[in-house]
Figure 1: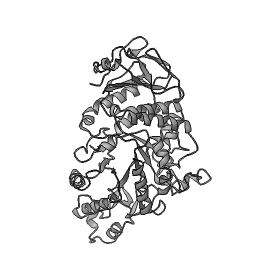
Figure 2: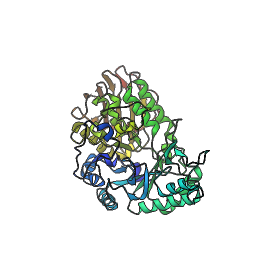
Figure 3: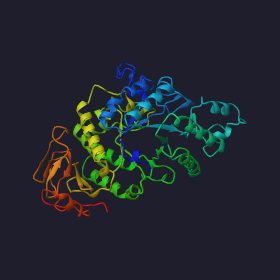
Figure 4: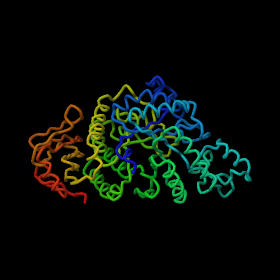
Length: 480
């Protein structure tokens, strides 16, 4: 396990959409906005560098950059020249300076590497398309007619045959080239596509030559499970937990809270093995979290409270910490509907939400030893209040999240308590009085147990004595 990654708060940046070299965007709206979003809009690597103070103050410990390679699209996944930086985004020198200054601010930097496909303008692809006897032909899969097979059947994106030895060596050389700049980790796009044989060989090479580099897979599966690359990588994006959190945003209630507990229970063996499973509320591939809530700030704030207190590193998608939404949404069948998931950063909006997320991330940093441990006493009341706890080393924390649409009262363990979140920070009032927590609809609290009562708390790891709703009901569905 890479300890730095397991204990970090990540920030996911689509470089072209985050910040210009002058820091703030002026690009938004206009008669051709829908078409403009399909192209570069002015974000740069220097824009990120000039925003490092903002990110550090937010509590971020690692940057996850979108692909920066020279290519045909602003998002970076249609690569033409893998050894060059896209000129719209900056230069290799800009990238090196960003990494240097991020490290000075105690932030790691990860690159996003698409290795399953390229754009047809990539030289080996262009040659292979012209001549079937080309030495590059075996770098690609072919369809029944002998044409290069397209990634998801897109003829512009030839699919790479990563089982071909010469291509495997080319991938290793490419990785060596970019890691020489000082990157701390790699996100492998569409990591379920390559074969286990490919991952076995690349993993052995990486662990030998770059043992400090964190290897993260984007490994979405229809089955909804995770851990298929455990043998080869240090972690995977946590699609099951993220899906449960997003479902709670779209349809809050008891069932959505129970689903979070269900996934927590299922992933316990992986957590104990040290496999790193970062979570997200939104990303460049799915609707903004704020869009799912219909603009309900209280519900979004509650989701961030849960995400940042689960035993997984959180990934914050650029702008969403400010409650950024999207100006439109298109049917799932519409091509490039994801342009609205990647609109330019709205720097001048959402200051209150940003302060709330900053508070949560700094609490996570402060109590990272607890938040990286196993949750205990996790469950949901019949009314939709999610609760889980952490204890150890003379400290204990209770997390409460009211996914019900009405005000709830939750009884806390007997003893002195301190609420680490308060009314002034989170939309939806909370009130802690004499071991009772009063939660408005879609509000939550992080509570620390104090002094001599901690030791009695730790002795009850299989259930919290005296925790429940106003009637005195115990929390159910403990994680075993």
